[in-house]
Amino acid sequence: MAVTVDLKPCDWFDKSTWARGIADLLIIDDENMTAWVADWKTGNNKYPDRDQLRLMSLLVFAHHPHIRKVNSALIFVVKDDMVKAKMEVEEFTPGWQQYRERVAKIEASLANGVWHPKQTPLCGWCPCTGCEHNPKH
Image 1 (spheres, rainbow, N blue to C red):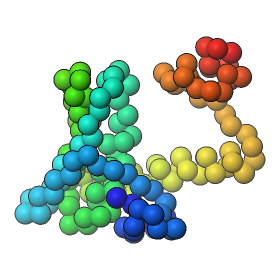
Image 2 (tube, rainbow, N blue to C red):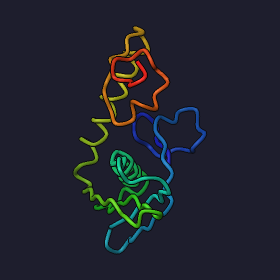
Image 3 (cartoon, rainbow, N blue to C red):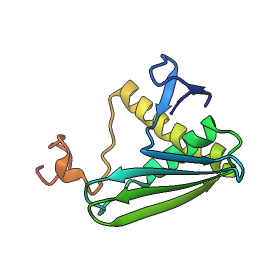
Image 4 (cartoon, one colour):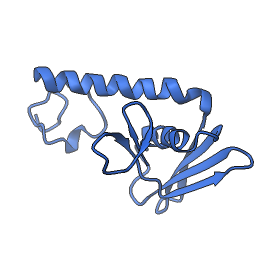
């Protein structure tokens, strides 16, 4: 699924595409105005990316405007684990606003060449070895 900056559904490769996401499983229950979206994971479940669930739910709302609730899950097939989330349609606008704020920070960093370091559990795999948070620093 893909959307333009004004959150209109568009083609994946459309030049006006602003955000994209691929669901491994999408079930739409038109009668109950509910959707289920899932992503299969074969890796470790130690740091599940809940933002992925949020983005996929927002994309479902954009592409299926009659849907009122999205149940989502990251399914860790090797670990026999599942991380679940739910989103109501009322969270659509504030949810996208959070992404717009994140994009604005990235665009500002691109424009001025200043990137503020942020420590995450993935710092050890980052190629930016000059960063204070990278253990290879």
